[in-house]
Length: 394
View (cartoon, rainbow, N blue to C red):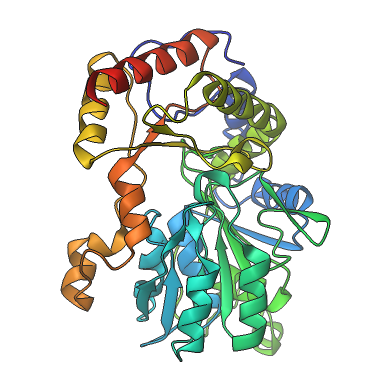
């Protein structure tokens, strides 16, 4: 992995597809079922083995997984959901899809994830949400045990947005847990978008240890249709009923064949991503205008992003970003605070300054290229380019 040099430009993320993946997908084309077939259940079972969760329901993408999780919990009109502002839009939009209301909890600068202290303050002040959606940013687990303790005390649900964190772990009480295990959450979701740890092209999954929640997710995934029960037994095998309004969020056997093949390489992907993070950490000079990512990214995470920060005014980041693009290094910014989006500003009146730590982070963050197919030469090109751009503009 990383043996073949990639042509310029270097993106911040890219899928890794090999001949085994191509053969796995091609084999499905000769089968009778290419949509919802046996490989869907096989992928779900494999994800349960990897994470330790009891149930998995694969679906069309990570956004659909978040929506399904909210539907399963009964999130509805005016129910309050809280999440991190430093995430992709879907972490908040999923509550809006259900008619709920969204608010945001500032990040902890040490982890770049939702701050449990701030969440506790909101609860103590009487603003108890129905659901909290902590985001495992860059592959680093949020403080799930701390959030679980608050959930037990105040009675809210927890959905772990682990879209960045397949293969990551966290520790609590001397025990190591996998992200997505649902040991401290009601549900968890993964994304299989091409830049994520593994890919199915597009795809996602909902994990849970609660059978009733898994059954609800499964029904909502396929139009709300149920094919069992008294009526079905009376009418015949062809009979089905739609008891709740559902969606077509199914995933195909073609996609899951790719996912299964990719899962066989998960440990290799994880090892290479950690090698790249270790190289960046070793070569880049913290303290010279550069703030390195949290330390646990190299030890507990299967790193999805390398979120560098440039210690200076926002224009420094912009200049470095553009300079790197000119030499074929396509970094990215993760993320614009969600509540800055016009939809949320217009609906809720959110203003800049709402989550000060998140805004400081946004003003100086830059995600460096990080994907398993990077060569050693690619890695050196990135750090040389970053150091030169920072020296020029810092």
